[in-house]
Length: 113
Length: 114
Image (cartoon, rainbow over all chains, first blue to last red):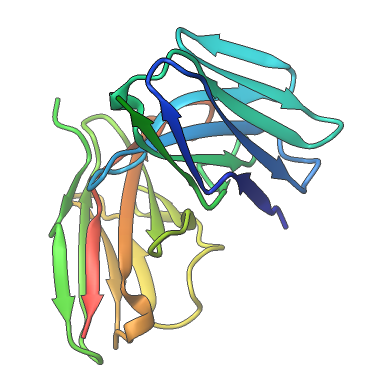
């Protein structure tokens, strides 16, 4: 089955700097890679996703890159702000069958003012 | 349009009791997913349901756990004879269709078994 690893587990950056979170997956059949942001006491929220037919996707200050050959994908947040502080989860799975994704263990991002 | 509603937010049960967790999906959503999150870990998929049907229960423990999504009313995740290892946050998500659409999460139910 699929196995997703995520690094780093914690990340502290100064406000305005960039943050990068990296994930690797094991199942070459996975074709959908969502990223979630979870704030304290709340449920996860989808912030960006990428499918295997695309190498990069950007949405304002966040971007995701995918390397299918190496089986890794990364989340990039530029110009970080204090409200970006949260736990971020990557996930991998198939985009044509429900939401049965395998999640990474999470990265706790702290943006220091 | 209210979001996904889960209740209770917090639930304390003694070992051996039953826990019932409820999830009301967003209006117009007929697909519901349940996840478990242990402290400091990512979410683990448990079960995917449509109205009156279990579509994928590959993540459900074989014993003590069951889920339903009746024609009327909320989806229910039921844990019988709870043990300390069941203590976790349980999240429900819903989507309008199963494919290529975002699932919206509720705020979760934090179950503590004492």
